[in-house]
Image (tube, rainbow, N blue to C red; front, side, top):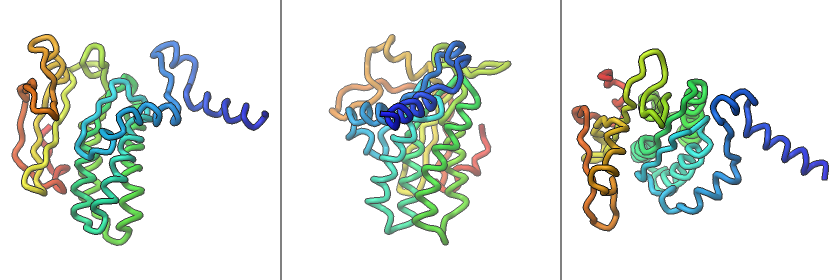
Amino acid sequence: MKLTENINQDEKQQQVISRKRVADHGEVYTAKREVNAMLDLVKQETERIESRFLEPACGTGNFLIEILDRKLRVVQARYSKNQLEYERYSVLAVSSIYGIDILEDNVIECRNRLFDIFNDKYERLYKETAKEDCKKAIKYILVRNIICGDALTLKTVGNNPQPIVFSEWSSVNGSMIKRRDFTFHGLLEHEHIKGLPLFSDLGDDVFIPEPVKEYPLIHFLRIADDQQQ
């Protein structure tokens, strides 16, 4: 009984950093058991490498790291015998994950945790041949995809709030990546304009938003070389 009480207390501490943060921001983290139970409701999607997920109040990434871990297990099972293919699909898996949080320390920790999930698996598989360019590409994508912002105002947080902008990363001709930037507001307004979904696996009509910026094709290992912000 005492051991159970200790486990429950440890889990409670992991879910709350401080009472002040709970009071100021409503910050309570979801425990791993509940995270996996919820993700199992859409298990097939969590195991599709290219399936996109957005967590609008991501905290330190409890949901996102579990999603990435599932995706990377699929990547490893399918492509680990070919390092370049493993790298390419790992980049696609990371690029499909998006998060917003209002607290900068959470955003930084979330990015770091997601990178560590990738890097631990990558180094374990290719200890002698792991590429710094691949690690840099992953870090660059995480900076673009995990945003310090307010999902209610749809703007970044800071002295000069700007509309939240997300980058879409699409694989083209194998190793090439096409980046297009969209405002978060633009992605959401389809619900009010046309009532159409953003995606459909059934061939239905979908809403196609207009990007605010498009970039030339670039090799997936050279993503971090793109200094155009």
